Image (tube, rainbow, N blue to C red):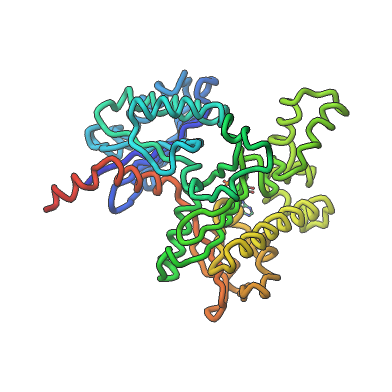
Length: 407
Ligand code: AMP
């Protein structure tokens, strides 16, 4: 059976899963952190075996070499030879307007990824470095790029355009792109399966709530709006990111604090959100604990987070002229009983009959509404790695090859 390697390369990290397809069984997975920073850590697991190796891994190519050795290891390996890996799927954060689907990597696609760097200067270079390292060490297998932005390319112009001079869109590509597309696509597809209804007829609101959070309105399987924008800074309050704020605050702060534009933007990205509001942590677990002990700022941070999410839900219900289900996913969406109940409790006007008895779970698929509820709510754990592997299977052509073999 084909084995697909699903990869997410960051600037100093590399996460991977070796997935057997089409059974979708995860054979092995790991993460290499601190690449190029000294004392790199490779954490690897296969079934119940867990291995942690600390050694200097100088760059992404060395990290890929490390990973490929590990998956073939005498004792811990999941495969005997690299020939068993039939394709590699890569997460790419920004595909601009050029990519509305996952694609097979070619020289032309690589050029286009380079052209998208200006839209995601923090993420795309690392994604490209990762792809190049894998292409060098696994040159004879297909490589597929899966974009965070691609799913949202279906948004209509009236949604993705900002009310700024039109030529800025034409000249510089300034528009809403949206992110977390692979996750929103995975959970909305799964919701349709759970509901046993065609995705094409459903109006869904997907809440990906993690350290970074975004909400998406998905009508008939197509993203028609999402809360993140030109960058992942926009939308709801996040762990350290501000979410939506009035743009005029930026020059005002530059003046008041005598800071550069980059320094203020760093504050928006790294020192705002739940961290800034609570004054405690960007991690919701710490904030919930403090709030339970009566900490006012922690309670305020939770109130603001919940209100921003509810506002997007209301707005998307209006845009779609109704909703069939709301989905919770990612670290907070899958695990925080408290946040889910604060969001769902007062939505009965919308047809959501929330069943608190169902809510006391973490990280599992669960319906959160009564069987008779006209509008449903679900927890659906996301699985971006699997979505990448599925796309890689269908786009690389190994799926057809497999059918031929089976015939
Ligand atoms: P992610 O970025 O998807 O990994 O999500 C990270 C966020 O999920 C952090 O804010 C965590 O505090 C939050 N999270 C993880 N587990 C829990 C939990 N049991 N209760 C509340 N929040 C959680």
